[in-house]
Amino acid sequence: MLKNKYQIIMIVTVSCIAMGLVDAVIRPGYALKSAIKILLFLGLPILYSVLNKDKDVKRVMIPDKKGITLALLLGIGVYVVILGAYLLFRNVFDFSALTSSLTAQTGVNKSNFIFTAIYISFVNSLLEEFFFRGFAFITLAKNSSKKLAYIFSSTLFALYHIAMMIGWFGIPVLLITVAGLFIGGMIFNGFDEKSETIYLSWLVHMFANFATNTIGFMLFAA
Image (cartoon, rainbow, N blue to C red; front, side):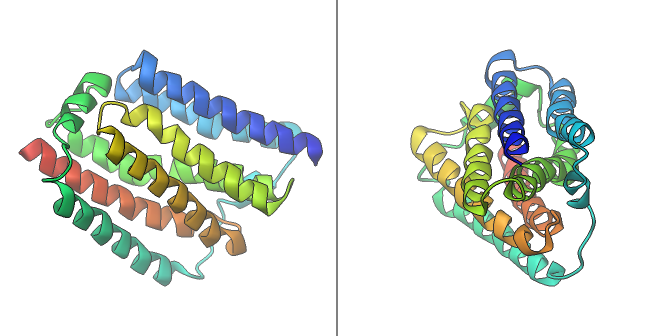
């Protein structure tokens, strides 16, 4: 178990650093960046599972119907809170650099944003939940302490997003967003702890992405 613990921590840490370099330094087009992310966030955990004959990695993908109604209600609540916060503070903080940064860094623009938004909402959210909740939390918790798994997965989930958000917001909004991502990661872990599957957190994550994509639409339309 000790060997598995350090392997999981190493895979998650190295993958997040690699994606940070891709997002902040290399800055390829969105399609190539997504392919690299799939290789790291899906391919490496599967490789770990095969080499260690650890079936827990696959079990996190088995659906559990319990709690879906609650997750949907929470997801809707998250959507309302995120969108409401933007509408409340859009005249306080400067969000104008978001769309230009997206276009400069990844090639996402007004004409292709809808396709990117669909991918982010459904596919990318599932990929991140598999990696951060299924692998970095559920699988790690079975090979270490739950406290470590909670803190580690939530911290890496929050820090991972910093590289992709460079240039999007000013420092105050960035810090608030990172703190919110850490808290959100802790809450998502709580959703999945009992069922040991990722579907409850995925639903809420999906609605959070719906909200940020709605804001993106509004910014691109401005």
